Length: 423
Image (cartoon, rainbow, N blue to C red; front, side, top):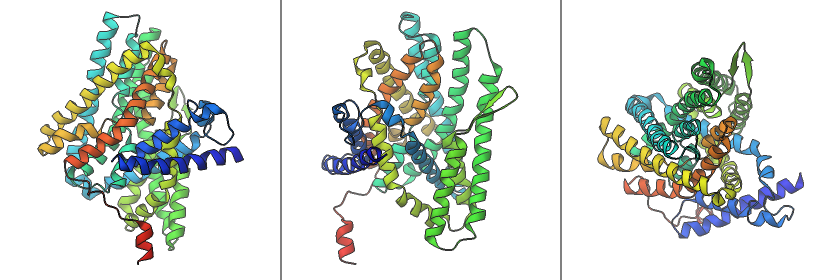
């Protein structure tokens, strides 16, 4: 246990120190955390097998999954703050239209490219894997986007639209993947399962929204018994952790396998709580500050679990490059088309799609599910390669786009140390 604590503390300090270097290069801090994890992972410093210094194996990183799950839960919970009724009235229809269309278009573009690759070279990729990768292309990583927005205090029409679209994207991506994976499984096995293709995806989304709604209402009901800011924040943290734990449960009702989407559950919890609690704004801000160390750990561990072995597999590189190019084109032009359809300003049309490129945990989770396919290992490796690329360049591209539309304040040299010394 002491080795784990030492490893985690060194990982946090390493990420923070590296962020000073990336600041000089005008890169987001999240990039520093990912690179720090990569350097401390089993392919660099971890290879030395010195206890406490880095992570010696991918299994060791996987053993800390509870930390990344908890961090994702808090990220999704705070994203629920963007779904206030006032915000939804202002741009709810546009966000839903853009969120659905860009995800569907990205999936279709990747499907067309990879199915064409299958037709030309069937020995490289199967039809079932091509369809599955198309669905995985829809997923966007909310964590990296949110971290960039927080670090630079980005605010404006595109930032608010972006946070809504990223949140909606997860629900759409989940549905697309469930349907596509059901079709892929049927193609691989020769048996069509209506339960897997239609019923279970809908059940998962409905159950997730229902559990999130109940937890949001319960948090508000219990929160009213406390008046101290610290106790209310402690209660909120406890509820988010409880929600994360509940969302990881699975069970069966007759022939239906039931599960929850952690992101949807926690996002719905935050949405309901923020819309019924009159003091939620102040409380959400305190929770965001409290979870900053957890978020640093999340990205450091995400960097450490990037498997560099995929860089030495020619087939993975070929399919991975095609996947990245097709997904990037689908996201960019899909967002541009849907933005024009909803009459967004020209700067938003040009730059929103770029901010939707980051991809991480959700896509990796889908890839793990796809491991049951005959060539599921290829799907996993392609997604690992894509995540490696997207996570390292995605945050910088997001920052660049938000700068281009004028929604990031100029970076200053303000120091908390100086402010505290001169109150």
